[in-house]
Length: 534
Ligand code: NAP
Image (cartoon, rainbow, N blue to C red; front, side):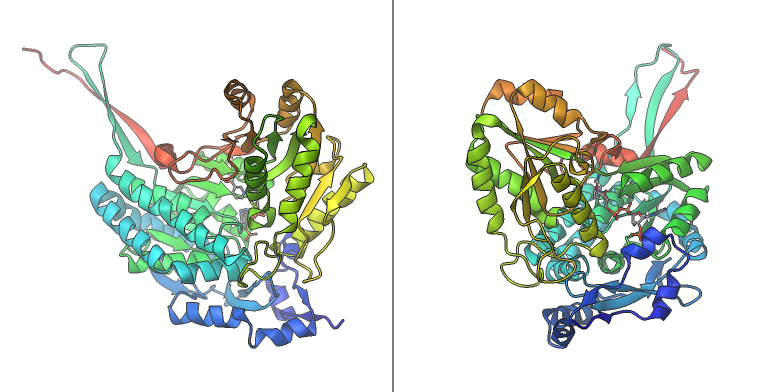
């Protein structure tokens, strides 16, 4: 098999400043000659030219309302995870460009915060309308750079846009308080004011929604932002930024930079102008940012990794349990922070559930997300597949058995077969860490007490799920699970109207809902004295 490397060594030089781990994540994909030939007529080419025609394919960063390259002209290729094709090159920026973006966000802050809630609301609503009007283009862009099936990508556009609509409404409802004072000549008033410039760092698995979930709330509150999307998926971020400009959001309110993540992160951390960092990504990077934020005592929200348990009790409705578990485990090929990672099945229902579940998993069609009928796209890159392989190897060496799948898919180096494991146990890596791939490990349990202990036996506490038809058990288990979000007879729980976030090492703060805006507001207390009575 002839191997073709899709980006030049010149491009690799761009990346030599980063750590080995980051270089590995960006390794060029190996593709076969037949895949290369397919590029000339591929759905990729057609999709990308449509996005380009719509003016949504940007290859520059947005700073102070201007589309700019890196100061030294360096660029970074963005690959399709399905084919390895280089979709476009984007600027590879660092500290200097980040400081310039912070400066622009800082200049724009005074004007943006001075608008009324209603004025900011109208601009956010314009942005929402444009995002929805461009749903098809954005959906294709997400599939192109991230790999998820188009139907899921279109779902992400709606989900991501809904945060903009929701916070457009919240912009008008930032209420303070009047507190009864302990002295008759005083009045106590509480104001809520925008924090200031926000640094937002986002991951690749939801290239649109992880940005809108942050900046829509920030903008509603009156903050301005410097966004750093993942280098793996910057194109959707740039398209969303283009639409924000078209919506009339003033220059400097939204800035998007990309490139050397540690350098960009360090610049955001070091700046006294940046008063808040909001991050979604791995717990390891989240911890670094938390330490970094101490230097300038910034406000911080962290949406980090998970290790979600999913419990199927004997009294569950099997069809509901299979549907919910399948949706939560295999959405985005298992690459979501709220993906089910450990499936506990009670002994009495174990055989019935595992048969029905394996049958449902078998029906998932794997392929390029742009193709009709595909339910499982590629993983983001080869490093992600290697992680899945390491988890599998460890589990099999400790006694797990493969019920379905269990290896790379014949489609290419970034595809992995939807997999079901049985006989998994608590000593396996897959029990301790999120696999972030399409592998569903089943664990048999006997009692409610045992399973709650096992489910909580993790350093993470983002999402948990369970299936039961017993109301008392539903309350008992929901209250006992040490997680920020619990799905009861439901596998898809994310929505703009509910507070999203975790406990333990899954993070700090909440996104979405009426609670989400508090992350971007400071509380100011006014004490008015010497008020004369009649
Ligand atoms: P990641 O490696 O932590 O990257 C997340 C973001 O941080 C990317 O933009 C990345 O940039 C940037 N970054 C990396 N190193 C940095 C540094 N030293 N300083 C500043 N920024 C840095 O995570 P990922 O692999 O993209 O995303 C997967 C993880 O995100 C999983 O653990 C998942 O559970 C978690 N996640 C959590 C939630 C939630 O709401 N709790 C939602 C989605 C995902 P580059 O990509 O450009 O290197």
